[in-house]
Length: 205
Ligand code: FE
Image (cartoon, rainbow, N blue to C red; front, side, top):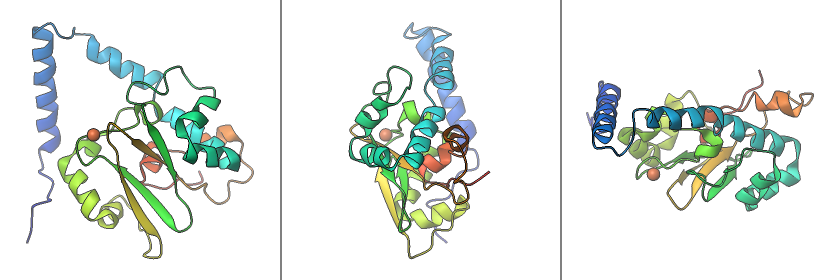
């Protein structure tokens, strides 16, 4: 059996210990203060997060012309909406949206490290940065999606988009069936970060 891509059981603890040691060292060297990390986390909890992405996707669901613009010129379309200042900065440079459709499912990854569109999705989850996830998602995306509980039929093409400092991708999931009567605000609540990463689909509540 080939265990090359097996997840080590202690990977999360090891990474957490490494991050803690790095933070302590940076504080000791005076590069950051003890509140720097909390300040950054707070900013991405309150100002820049998946709630911005949810607004963008919900608008795309109710306005097909906006959806077209969003895919063609993502920063331009995002600038039309009433979102916090700085959507195009702080890891939001060069964001590009790709839309799922009846014949195509999109998945975003970063094979090199952890590039991610922070202003629309917030901080990347632990597993997004995991070397095993990154390599497996590129080599066998369907198998990985299955482990997320997503069975993509063979008739649907799976496209994997590799984010980098040049382009940070996010997915516009398909609008769930049975949501015709919902308002834009209600639709926003159906848009999860996982759906905008492509490891899930949006579901009616
Ligand atoms: Fe990266």
